[in-house]
Length: 100
Image (cartoon, rainbow, N blue to C red; front, side, top):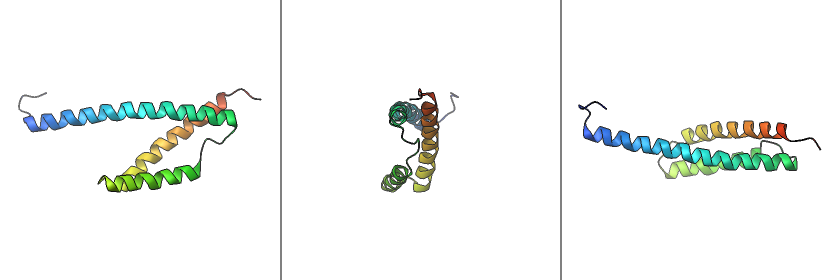
């Protein structure tokens, strides 16, 4: 880190780095849970995608974003990115299940 960096900027960047690390750890835990959901869905013969749940989640997270002073459009885009990856995982898991 350059010595000329103002202490306040260094402090803020350190906080951002900590938030980034926390986000990565939280996402890892979320994907562990969604992989378990994918395995259960595959076992039960359920589809990888659940549009009704996804719509409810979008509405819930938009509300949470609004309450948290975060752009709800950004929150929805972020969730869509995550859901797309979850569905991909679920499809992969379903393809790995032995046929009955």
